[in-house]
Length: 88
Image (cartoon, rainbow, N blue to C red):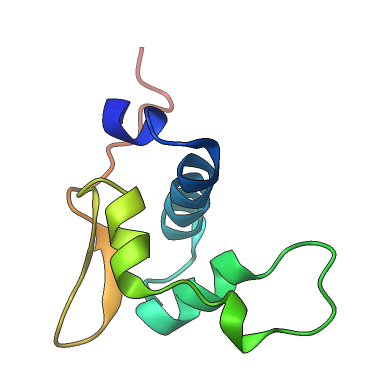
């Protein structure tokens, strides 16, 4: 996470979007779904094809913490996130 935090603001914000979508999704997302999710902003009315971020860039800004399954194109964190809610 230190590597992610040490990036320029745009890359860091993109990585944060990726993490949020992966962690909060009700089901596992495909790479294409994730690309569309991070490309959409609250003020957009239409999806612009050039707004889609390339897989290489998405993986790079996440500093090795996100992987794409080559067989299914599913995107996931490299390790499972352990919920700390309720632990104390």
